[in-house]
Amino acid sequence: MRYVSGLVLGQDGFFQGHVGMEEGTIVEVGRGRREGSEAQGLIVPTLVNGHTHIADHLVPLDPSLSLEELVAPPHGLKHRVLEAAREEDLLRAFLEMKRFMARRGVSHFLDFREGGYAGVEALRRLDGEGSHPFIMGRPKALEFCRQEVHGLLEVADGVAVSSISDWEYSELQKLAKEVRSQRRPFALHVSERVREDIDRVLDLKPSYLVHLTDGTDEDMARVAQEGVPVVVCPRSNLYFGKVPPLARLLDQGVTLALGTDNAMVCLPDMLAEMEQAARLLRTQGCGGVEEALRMALNGRKLLNGQESLCIEPGARCELMVLRYRGGDPTADLVLRSAAESPELVCIGEHCWS
Image 1 (tube, helix red, strand yellow):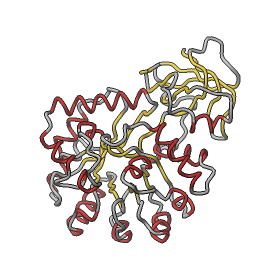
Image 2 (tube, one colour):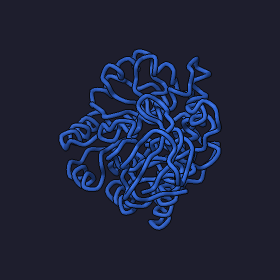
Image 3 (tube, helix red, strand yellow):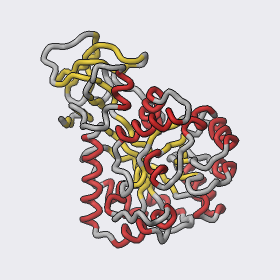
């Protein structure tokens, strides 16, 4: 049995306790410190990165390019680079990002994977290495093909596209309907560069949305009313001159999760993303730390509706131990953890220290 001790994050906040793990499963959660603990500090669930494009780690960043010039399909820089990339380089980028995330306390990530079947299959091939992917595949062309969708879903967990602005809406309707008929999640970016018609977006019945940086209060209220979560990516948005309206989204009742977006702009570091979200929320009139932590933990809800907290006996071991600096534990976790790696990360039977 392996033990860690310290302040454990439970349903009602932090408590002084310990966690025992064996063969990739949590078998004991108790009060008080346990002798022989291999790590001590803040004991919290691993995080789920709600939105990534990890293949973009291959793309050389040109700061002079606009968001559209860099990422818009089909001719943005990233699409040209990835189309020409050698398979071994792509796999190396995947592996580097998966291992980076695992060591930084991310057990799962939801990746918008371009390149059709081949693009998804390449990432799927690395299952078992580092952080675990939940792959949202994308058709090769901006048009619907039932046969391609069925093939894609043989290797992908769901389907995600760029935005309604890039597609003929009738084609997107057929794609979303087909994905839903296969009981798989469908997602898309929305109102990232410009405001898009939220009613048309919601008529596609998405499982979740990404960004909503240019939405109106009415758009946000509609999203909340439909119960659709939104993944926000503050560091990426800020790089491109967009300030994500986190406080407004929360005020309208939207369930928010955090993602890191394009890996050429931001490494997939959820501890850094959580800190940025908290600081941004403070500038928007919110307390910040508790809301940012909740957003970071909400990524787990995107994985088949799992609850955000999972440190309990019988659960799969997905936890990390972060340095405790003696202050308010939530503030220490959110604002003072990004500067260094966790003391210990355990994902199943694999541990990093």
